[in-house]
Amino acid sequence: MKRNLLFISMALTVLIGITVLIISCKKDKQKSGCTVQGGGINQEPQAVVMFYLMTDSHCGPITFNKIVNQKTGSDYYPNFSGKIDRFYDVAPACGTNNAGTVVVSVEQGYSYTYTLSCTGKTYTGTVTVNCGETCKAVELK
Image (cartoon, rainbow, N blue to C red; front, side):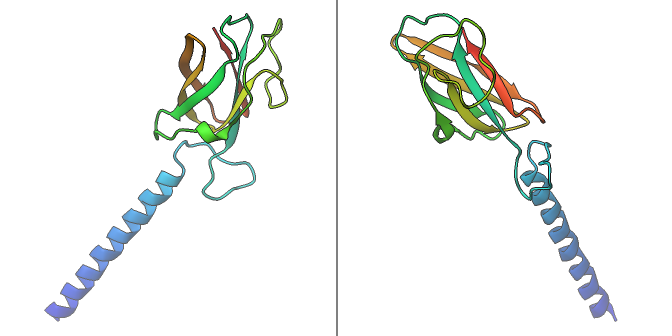
């Protein structure tokens, strides 16, 4: 009888441990707390960050160096397009179809540090993409 109780006790302990592990893994996959419309599984909602200039940088084309998720440390360097080779009189509409901007795909619900540069000048800063934001425009100054 004692042997059966010991076995049941050990089995329950293992079962509880496995349950806790599964729950913690599920929470880790929903890192930002944002949800995907339509119920995507194990996906963080996506957004783009668009960088642009309103004044001439006087240093040639500005190229993208990096954007790093401050929580996870992930670098989104491969997920960009464009270069900044002009400036705007009026801020461009946020999106992916603006010539002379740099656009980076990121996940919603996080803050990112970024670096862009041109000859003799570096632009750095932090941008936060909130849940529900699909595009965030950042003017480099």
